[in-house]
Length: 158
Image 1 (cartoon, rainbow, N blue to C red):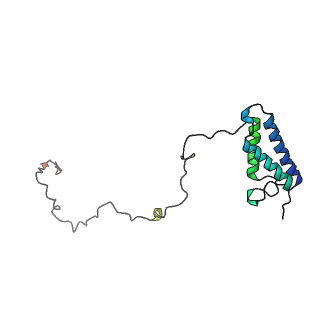
Image 2 (cartoon, rainbow, N blue to C red):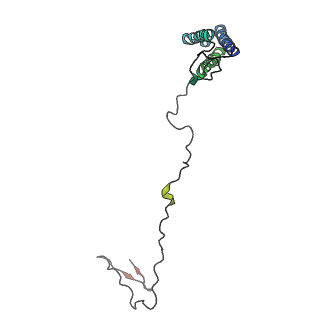
Image 3 (cartoon, rainbow, N blue to C red):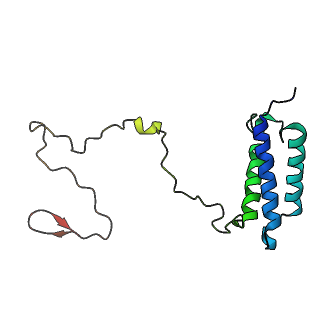
């Protein structure tokens, strides 16, 4: 079953095609002239618009009410710009695969952040005065060749 396309939209698309073709023919610089592919593209669009009233049939390619698909209208716009002398900008040859914008932090949570670590008490345990020994705790033996220097006040210095 053929699509119903508004005749006004078909005529508008045909006028755009004719205007772009005329502007390209009237331009005096060779850069503004249409290439062979662009000339053939415009011719095939005109032929389909005259015959079917629309230049595309696949609903995935554009609005079914329009006479041209999204890509066809984009290409026609590029051709119109070229005919006016405002051609496409060449692609920049820089940055490669680098990110253009800085990355933002993720919005996800880390489940390991929710785990509460056991709190270690840093103060040594207090010994009750009744059970405190009369002698100081034994000191570990000094390594071989170690000669302690005794200083008044009871502290060792190496």
